[in-house]
Image 1: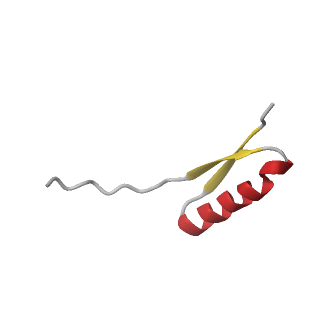
Image 2 (image 1 turned 30 degrees about the vertical axis):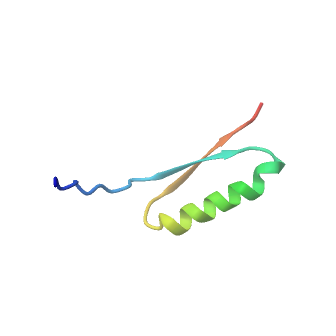
Length: 50
């Protein structure tokens, strides 16, 4: 079996949806990312549904 090279995550990008309906989901995504990717910088990208 070949050895898989180790990789490092440089940064995490979140894609968040704009609008009141998505606020709760966006918050859950941010909390998940902060919890699971502690060492990396997290960048958020907002998308408008229009």
